[in-house]
Image: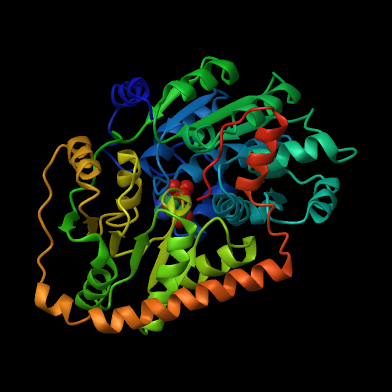
Length: 452
Ligand code: AMP
């Protein structure tokens, strides 16, 4: 984020910061009985803070800006008012939710379906990596709610005969800061041009960046701001550590820590798809149940990985930043920044995967001789100096031989996988990233997109 945006985010003021002192019920917020029952069935006993703030104003028909992150219950905060409006005036192609990643799209659709099952709500997920024909068929059935990533939705708006959003009543932009950071601005503009001006808009974002402010001015009418927490604070129950180590022994230190903290569930962040895959293979060769999640995997594989981890069939999830925000993974005990994040803000998002909902958690950041400056920036951002994670160096060194052997096998496996993929002439290129690149090329811009 540019310095100006960082300031804008840090200085964001809210109009309704009233703390929620007493626990209120969904009914108190104006939620209709059948939806209160649905909440109850999901085990949602009382509304979360963002729900308390946003639901009443949304039910009054106001546009809403919600400053809240995933994990805050924000999906319920926008889904409940939409479902209630749908109950009052049933209509097909009623609401569109734009979200930055495929995983989030599926999670949102699951929540809509769970909350709306008793009222027969139909949703469709429109994301890259899935064949367009079956999506066109699903759109032809005119679902009530479409949950989409912007790139693929624009593809359908431009190419799918008979599909349009001219009757849309609700637009949600979920994780708007991230949508814009992923360079989906052009796509969002295109979508805004083909939906009715006379609609309700909810914009949810973890940070109020300059780009988000611009989008807010373009898309929302006289909105009410609802916020639940200040952005750059890591929770108290999170114990944050670093380790300062030579780059060439990173793998051995990782194995040491996984052994030391055995029995926990881990999320390990790597900076590239390739390193995510490599490290997963390495750990598997050493007998750990590790599973990768990154943007070069097919849609099915990504969902499969996530589900196995969620179901606790695997205890270690290795991910790129595509997974660092937004995913609802409740039971991560330890976050390891195996590769230090280059944007300090990503640090907050990564470590935010643990110590959620009042539970405690640990994060350990690997700092090599090349990462000192980045690490200092992180400490500056969070406003504290982190302690070193205690280690027995001799024990780490005893692991190096076994680790070297596992590295050798992992390299071989990686090469084999690459060759297999090439020979399959895999057309798994339809990822959000690839679509983004195509759109950029089509738009004549030369800026390269990072593959996460
Ligand atoms: P979200 O921030 O929308 O991704 O929600 C995070 C998690 O909180 C999801 O697993 C929701 O099912 C859950 N959740 C949402 N609202 C409530 C609530 N009022 N009480 C308990 N859990 C909730």
